[in-house]
Length: 219
Image (tube, rainbow, N blue to C red; front, side):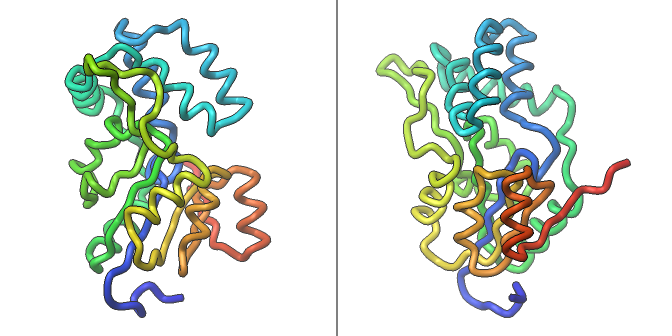
């Protein structure tokens, strides 16, 4: 299906970690916060255990680091992280596609299992509206401190498709993901279902289904 051939409202959806860039920005931010004494490093080993066993559960488990922190404080730390930490290693071909879609009037969504506040600075780098960043929403208590849990549908696996469909009832013509946690979102696409450096489960499904696979060149 040619992306140019459809007119009217249309959208594309991209996972973030492992698709827009190499690595995991949620983990990078967490380690950066631990190194500065702002997050509890004792939580890292339990998180890794959970994440190895069940990556979807790992997306929720990492929220424990945020417990007790206020939103304004966290936003300030996130801004400093994006400003001072090592820059993202962007995937050039994916970013070029993202920008092409923006130039051709697609509504662009980033749908991720990373906390939303960690992804909000993306608007400085990519043509995406902050309202189109669908990611983990932190829950806060009455004192305005993070509880360590999510406050909305968890944007992993089926939750990605649920959040995207709630935000965009029109046609999705391209969806890009890299893991088994993106499959339901990819299946929403009426056009391209793009596996970017896929994990073994997604690679097997993409191969069986004839979905395009993109492996980032090394070197």
